[in-house]
Length: 471
Image (tube, rainbow, N blue to C red; front, side, top):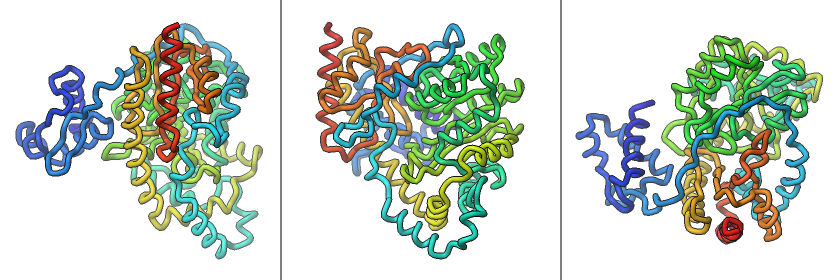
């Protein structure tokens, strides 16, 4: 844990314990720097992190104060490791429940994407047009898998900035992150193999395991710090785990973020067992703190971490451009890409490369992160106000999902059905586990700050949940 993280954790514990109360002023940056013996930048980063989490608020010319909304619901507790491995059968439920999630007439709390209006689509179109006007026609049949050299170079530069030594030849451009993840999964498993996942885990990961006839074992996961590495080690000592599919940065649905020390311990554990890690990192750019979190790939020395990401959640959902930095498995992944869909569309790749090359991406990301962080605070306060007593809510430091634990009397599928009748989509907890254990949980997408009906919809869902809790 870095100094600013340790300092932020200490303040957060004081707030949780009541030593610092809502509305109370905390030490100024100068005071805290002098009394703690740390640099002003360390204090600032700690305060910035706590502000992003909604625990502190900055007041012009007055300093930092404990947020008056810190009385929001408590955080859910860590999940438990599954008692046994199991075959996966979730697709039918996912199709039944989320079949209407893309309907623009619904308030999209159950959606997997942030609001399309948050993306700079006109600027992307201009960049794409500029790139295509100078495109050599032969490249449309030459740049197949592994993909556009220009885009792979831009992605490689971003890895370099994160401290990851990823060669462009290791990168395979895919049709979105889901294809990258599936290609990686196919490359390291056979039907019947056992794959370790978080608990809860993204339903699309479960669908992928189901499609490839793989079994799942769900590992205890904390809503703030991610998968329990010790619990994973215990499972690996007893079961023949062939691969792990994990999301260390802002996990879907929890929003958890593994500390660097845990990421390193995870990579070291898997290296000792020669087990590949399929790292889903589609939300890593959506951090609310001062620094971008590093992927587990940054600690990989054996080529066992297959890092997958895309631009679908951060820049261009409809472009469907993702990639895999597949380590020692890059050749196998590229071959499977050729056998399955040959290549990702070149115009999309060239347009993204042009946009990234001229710095537009980072300017856009700064604005997007600020927008999402601000709406997170608003949504957490609304849940605290309208949802039934006993509700628990995660406190993510990035991404755009909240995991909400409701009183046990509330059946999430029934809540989903009743909310849908009011024009509101939700993602019930039963979707996020092979054994459907999260029956009184829901995932809420807060990435739609521009939706006029979002606040009213939260109140409606809270009213329905209160009625179900009351029996």
